[in-house]
Length: 590
Image 1 (cartoon, one colour):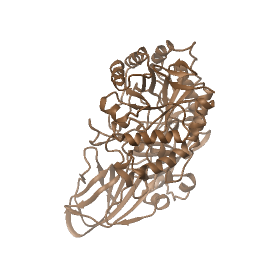
Image 2: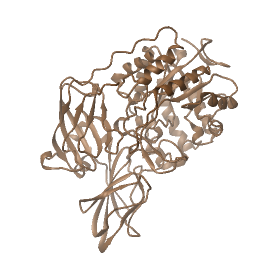
Image 3: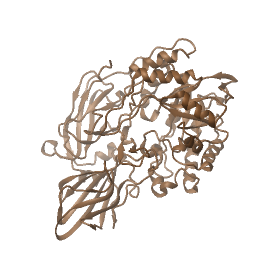
Image 4: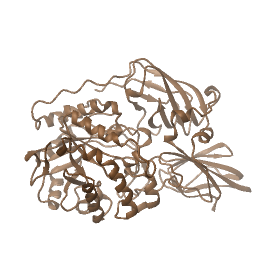
């Protein structure tokens, strides 16, 4: 058993000063079978601590129903076995470029901007969640022989609101649930952020990517004493679909890291290892300085240009950071662990089945909703996935423009069963189909959520069609809508889908195929010729692919594959995936 405390200038372990050299590793973005390896890589880089968020919505698909919450406990046990300390950031909001910032869609749907406030309709489910989750943390605190030394109160609240009473209630709730280690907050090193996000009596930390001396000087104006810590040292960045890949040079990042340590501060490298947004859990952001512009969806890879890349390999940045951190280590640093097995030879998958989107919806979709106006994803109970809205254009009438108001995020339109175009809200939410539509006609709009906003004032906004569908200036009414959730794609359910021969069909739909693997291990997967959709291998959802780039392949953790036949499903939403899938070996890093 040990004690961990916040001193006047340092963190204190059993009364002795200690510096936290931490790295962010989100266990939920890494296959569980590879946790040990990734922790070994962080230890070899020179870190003595690991930090993780906990995404509420991953474990609470519906009110009162929880999934594998014990995964956090298993990860913290792995941290202890690795000989490291742990920092836990349980939210309830986490940002993390994660769907809805970790908040459940069934909560933000009805509450909107009432989330992250003292509103009792928000706090009641937060308390229920914390009382379900926090025993995993409490039982593994350092004063009980575990690795947990710090727990965060909310997350970057100063970037969002100023409800100090809410923050104080979250801190109080953490204590009520048994958290005894020190609490902290983290915000950008700006006066309004630190003012809005700090809690009296709770350690404040700062988040930045450079300018440590200036950042800590600002922090000191708000907190004259206590250990200095950069809780998020942004050593890289994440990517959005349709943009350039973000890269930060190793020399520049290492110099910024050294500056933090020369200030006598502790640090948490964000990210030390990013991992992957499996199963469509990537969030989205609003463009612009005020984060209220067009939507920008985050890619499946969360590589983050981190020192340990998406596949767990050491980068140039890893070796540069190791050189800096070695100066602050106690004893020699361990060598990196042996890398996980890699795919031995490339494999080309064979596609043998195809089912239309309508056929898949009939088997896997939710109940049909009949409403005057199109319901949102939240109203249909869809977190990640698609919604098909069907509406009739009365007739006879001449061709008029067909438009959608309040569209989020992308819709493939069919008129009388034939493709009519794609509506995208990259530059605005009120969009019009390229060609006019005559009446009478039946219009289907297949809308996909590209990820809910995870940061800024648009957090919690509804998804789907939030306005209406117009023919010329007239709103159309009488919608038949059905949702298709990604988590409906389970082996037992997909087995009920009736597949036709893929050789005879093409276009959007669910493709079924096989990968015959010899020498299973980490790999990358591509869908040649396809446009946008999702891929499952042996029932494990690798995430979204999209020709918009910059990501051109999906990481496949070796434990997902098996020797011999591997079943693949490709849900293609715009083009044709009939060419199959290609499983390739990882490229060597230079």
